[in-house]
Image 1 (spheres, rainbow, N blue to C red):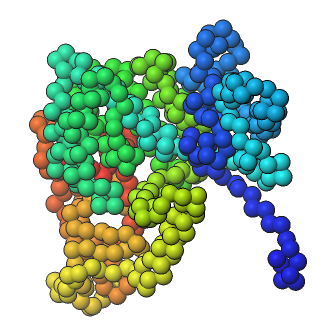
Image 2 (image 1 turned 90 degrees about the horizontal axis):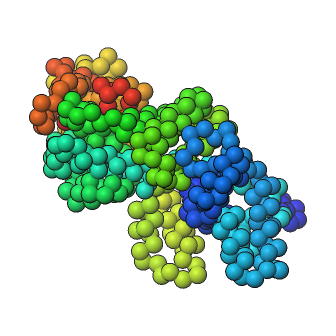
Image 3 (image 1 turned 135 degrees about the vertical axis):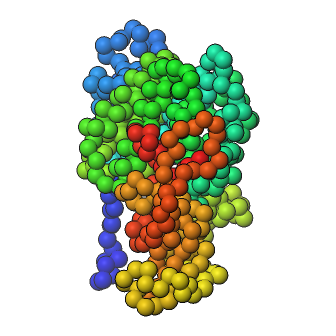
Length: 471
Ligand SMILES: [Zn+2]
């Protein structure tokens, strides 16, 4: 109702729908990979090999590294499919409707958002669709597949790289920011069970999305420093590196606008290297979906939205759901409880406060360390809470936009200033055996925490700039 008590109809338009294939099924009733036309954005992309062989000029396969032949679907095209299936459901047999659904890649869902004619001006399914790059790359995605295939290749070299070398490398004394993971988490990723199953049959390496982001730089480092000096890994290694380049761009687009044409070229290179190395039959739909990311970046003015933040919080949702019975109102109850609990936490006085955590103590020896502090005696501690993030000694942090990494020795504060006493870390130039420590520079410096907006966890094309994790 408005101020005068009159009823109003309020429409909110969605401008960006970040989603993976499960979300397409749930929100749009689009089948995704289980349909013959498996991409909602391409009208002529099919997984039907016989049809593809018979009509190579009209149809596109998943393995295309250039989407010039793909016919881009419009919102009207998707609505047309929905209406065609709805019409068939009224007039045709159930078997024919089922077949039509598989061919068109859309389920019959009369109560779905796409079937609602009134909502069509406000909800443009294709125009706003953002294929989630995080799910494509890191969640049972292209990344895990590349790692699995590379491990398989290592076991087929002559002589093979022993599985336990990978395990030992992952179990080295890595340093990692606690917001990203722990050294034991890195060690667990390289466990014998996981490595063995990929080595045996080339199946996707089993990791969660967060684990994969820890695993990629470590495994890449292992390949560069330990394997490639002795073996020629050939094209598959190029494919593995090309994937890292795409990952890096995905990360950059989350921080600042980037050039979509560059990402376009990187995605094409990644696809063609993969096909050349492993064959077109191994290309998963997710790798094709990844090819649409540059167009999304272009549409969103150089930015890329993904579901990573939500994915990192799924444990919180699961915790809320644990004590709620799965009845008809399950979804609503879980979301209400989650919102209430999050709101409660944010309302607490110190939710986003900056403070040193106990035990904090005065440190006379640090007086005059920074001119802004004057003669105030700073307080020092082994942990701090800064803008909702906990930072501890022993962590490795990479200031946003910088290429240097710092090992934290202490957290310090004076007036309203916060900082960490950190040691700059240098690169390990060679690995003759599995190093136990990273190289350190001899200079201890103070770094102001205000500079730590984000922690970098990504691969850089130049191998001397792998950051975050150091042996
Ligand atoms: Zn497509």
